[in-house]
Image (cartoon, rainbow, N blue to C red; front, side, top):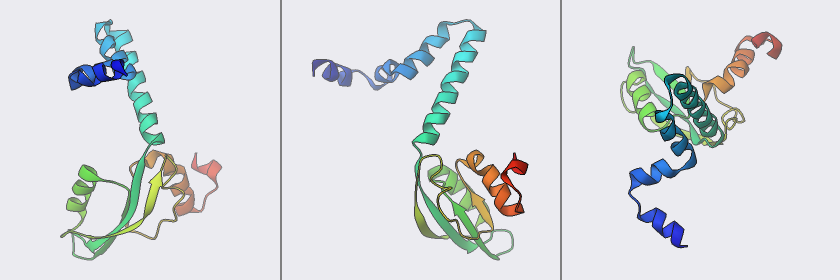
Length: 146
């Protein structure tokens, strides 16, 4: 209990540096450029995979008038915060109506949902679904989509 209390009393910047992955990244700054870059790439790859595994979000259908011509626009997305604000401001003339389709957990959470027909689909983890989207849109076999 005493070690945990001492850890919590440390400044946030020190606590950040003491976490294992962050400490590894911080220690890389003392390495020559080649090994430092390799270690930083490893940490970045690890964080990307961890982010995909622990991704939790909400799949939503956005409907509203298009910014380009005012025609009705339907967008399916799992984006949140800044990404959602950017794309809705870019695509819609006014704030779109939002209809929640359900939650998505993990890297295949969105893929398990039956997505409705939409003009645009914006997915945070799109690399995981390229093959599936290609197969669905072209009616091709998965081996062709590789």
